[in-house]
Amino acid sequence: MPSKTAKMPAKTVASKTAGLKKAASASKAGSRTAKPAAKSAPKTVVASKVVAKPAAKAGALRVEEPKKVLTQRQGFKTNEFVVYPAHGVGQILAIEEQEIAGAKLELFVINFMKDKMTLRVPTAKIANVGMRKLSDPTLVKRALETLKGRARIKRTMWSRRAQEYEAKINSGDIVAIAEVVRDLFRSESQPEQSYSERQLYEAALDRLSREIAVVQHVTETEAVKEIEGQLAKSPRRGAKAEADAETDGDIDADPDGDDAAVADEAA
Image 1: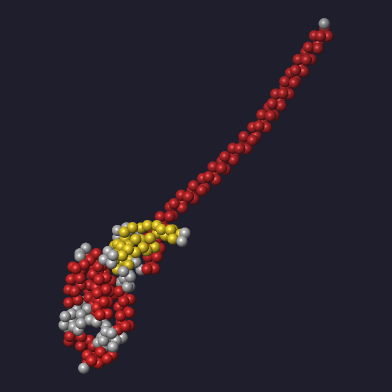
Image 2: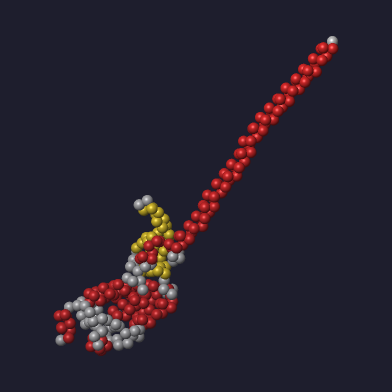
């Protein structure tokens, strides 16, 4: 009996020792499984930083885009009247995008009502073609004052003068166009214009009257009357004035450059 009683505590001690070993192994296993969780936390923080950077860049790009478009358009807007040197006064009907040769282009759609023509001009090319806004009232007044001055006609061949006049008309400069109108104007007491002179005069008068009409909010007919009124105030108009100008060497008597015609008129 005493021996049996002594063996029982030994089993109990053994079972307790085994329990402690299991608990220790379980705690070690728990500590091993917890380590990956601790490592995964920094990964989440890094990922959030990577995602945030592209968002900031995208926002910066969205801010820059309107500035680029504004620079290309040079402040021109839809329904605004503009001056296109080669065609005169037109109106911007729309600003549209088209894909040409795989590239997107922004275009001004300009309508020239009197010519029944619509022109599409890339917004990035308006500086090259010389498109401009309408002249301000001060510049229009200066052009009208130019009409009252004395005609200044170089004593050169008509073909060369015609090229100079045409260059002034297509320059888009309202004062230069007024100079052409002034130089080619003929009153009733003066000799008639040649066909080529008349064409250039009418082209210059049309460009000038259309811009004045839009700026002053009047009809083209009223603008033409104002121009002719200013021309009537110019000095030395008439047959005598024409003869005096020729004597001074300011004018070539033959608009077409025909020397024989000059001799006939002198006779």
